[in-house]
Image (tube, rainbow, N blue to C red):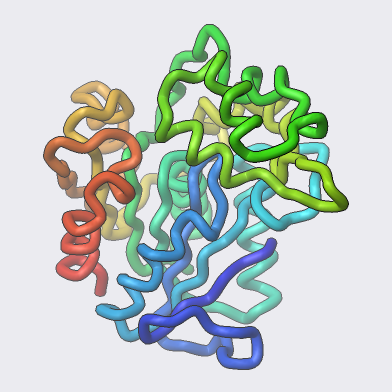
Length: 267
């Protein structure tokens, strides 16, 4: 997995860090996200926490090579292989949306490695399928024939009205040899959407006693009373923190409030 490293309020080059820090924090982005989306947040957290922050590009996202499969169990294995290779024994997780589900599953399967778990606006449940998924809209657009990012945005606006969502998705555009392409493996993501909307409860045999904090947006549909109850069935040491007037992208909408929670609760 590709990754970016932050410490003492700056992004480090490969020769500037090692993996033997006593305090390590992994950040997992959401679906259609990438490590660079978390750049400003990672800088802020690194300014208040004396530790090393590693922000990952998850499978079929960001700067990773494309793969023909994606699922939570496969991504858990990606993380496990990473910590084995780097000899990392203990770390905390901050995971948003898809990354939050990855963090929950890893914690349930390998609690011995986890110090704290921060889940951002997602629950360990199966979410209903959208009539038309975002990935279907992206697949409809032939970006190779687009002349500019604005051209891609105009085409995408025919399917997605939300300008903020379009701006977020457009961060996945690459421009090489005079042509645009998606850094995402859209066909693999489309095939994996059932798994990504779900949560592999069949893989879990234990509940977690790891300190777990779920931070959610007041206006988000991803956390409700029923979903909270599902959460409590799997995580016994659990607290919820609501951010007022925020939706699913609360760390972008309300960064100050999000950072404040991190500064108080991240140990």
